Amino acid sequence: MSEPMDAADSDNAAADPWIDAFLEDLVHVRSASEHTSRNYSQALNEFVAWHQQTYQKTADWKSLDRDLFRGYLRFLGRENYSRSSTQVRFSALRTFYKFLIRKGQVEKMPIRNITLPKKERHLPQFLTPNQISALLQAPARAWEIKKKKSKRPPSPEAYLRDTAVLETLYSCGLRISELCGLTVGDVFFDDQVVRVEGKGKKERLTPIGLPALESISVYWDAINHPKFPDQPVFYANVDDKLGLYPRLIQTRLKTYLIMAELDPNLTPHKLRHSFATHLLNAGADLRSVQELLGHAHLVTTQIYTHLSTDRLKRVYDESHPRA
Image: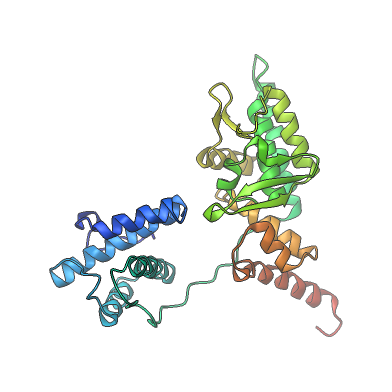
C-alpha cells in the first residue's frame, strides 16, 4: 500500500469508532500481524477520507451501497493504483464489513460481487543451493576478516548467532517473525523439530536439520545461554537478554549478502522461498510443503510449483531429442 491518495488525506479523516473497534478486534481477537493491522487501518481511513471529500459527509456504513464502492474502485483506477494495492484496500473493506455484520451493525455486504482487477502474479525469488551455501558461510568469513583487522581478539558471539539464525531460517522455512518468537522450550534436539507459532497464533511442528541444531548449540555454548524454556533462542543483546528482532536480522543479512556476492536487497523471506523451492525440486509433494510452511491454503503454496515447472521445462528443452 505505497501509493498516496492525491484526492484525500487519510490522516485528516475523522476518527471512526467502528474502525477503531475493528482494529482492536483484528489485533487482540484475530491475532493479525502488525503489517496487516497497519495496512487495514490505512485502507479504511483512506476510504473514509475519500468519502468525506467526495460526498461532503461522514460515511454511514449502513447506507453505503454497491454503486458507491464501484465509484471508489473507478477512483482508484483513475489514480493509477496498482492492482495489488486495490486488492488490499477492498480486502480491508470486506473484512471490516464482516466484522460489522457480526456486531449486528449492518445486514449485508455491499461490496459483494464487485469485480476487482486481478492481482499481479510475481514468482518468488529464491537462491540456488550454491548461493545458499555461500550465504551460510558468510558470518564465519566476516568474523575471520574482523579478527585479522582487530588488535584485540573480537568476540565471535554475534557471528555464531548469525550463522545459527541463517541456518534455522533456511532449515525450517520460517517467517522472520516466527524465528524471532522462538524460545528454548520450542527446540526439541532429540526429536529434531521446533515448535513454531505462525500466523493467527497457530502452532505447528517443523523439522530442523542437524547443521542448524549444531549451530544453535555452538552459539549457546559461546554465550553461556541459561537455557530456561521461556528464554529466547537468539538474543539481540546478550547482556540485556533482549530477544532478536526483525530489523536487526535484515541489517545483518545485507552485510552477508554483499560478502557472498549476492543481491543485498534480498530479504530474509527469500530464504523461505528457497526452502520451499528446493524441497519441491527434490521431489517433495505440495501438501507436505504447505504444512511445513504453515500456509492455511494450498493455493498459497502453489506459486512455488511454477518455479519447479520452469526447471522441468529447461531440463526437457536441454535433454529431449525432439523438444
